Length: 209
Ligand SMILES: Cc1cc2nc3c(=O)[nH]c(=O)nc-3n(C[C@H](O)[C@H](O)[C@H](O)COP(=O)(O)O)c2cc1C
Image (cartoon, rainbow, N blue to C red):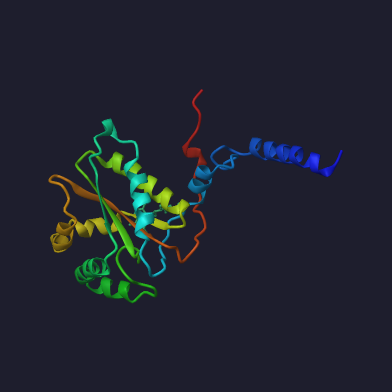
């Protein structure tokens, strides 16, 4: 038999052996673009100095809005900010509020803003009880972004300050519907780092017989 005929068989055997030795969570076993994107995505905290292209951002937003949500009520609000005046302005207020800690933060190498230095920030808001819906929306956006070569980082940290009275002039500009509050933000941009995957505890998921 020629090598060309044997090769696919050898590949199949190799894949079968490797998959049957590993947990389904640990190894994808499936060469599929969705699975590959999910397994490759990492939180990015260093970005190139250019905002996300708006045509790409439109696709990312549509992917977010296509997420499953309770009774398709779509009670979420998503705001994209790529205006440096906004991001730098709110960061200045944040640094002021932080005092000495703020001075130290701003002197760190590569520091640009309080959103992990991202040039584009997506703010996500929901009414009380809508946190699960917006969580699903956000992951759709982060995975879509990664598949298009755009890095992201989910951010809970900056939201505490954004709920502070000091940040009100900027939060008002987001024009959130009545009764909605910010749940988290997503830093987005073209990655300027490629961090390693953080370990996952596979014992957190198991079959119940
Ligand atoms: C709800 C939530 C809040 C987060 N808040 C922050 C944050 O404020 N700052 C930050 O740098 N990363 C934040 N992260 C990112 C996590 O640190 C990150 O997802 C985790 O360490 C796993 O790393 P990976 O995303 O690269 O797999 C947050 C993630 C989630 C889901």
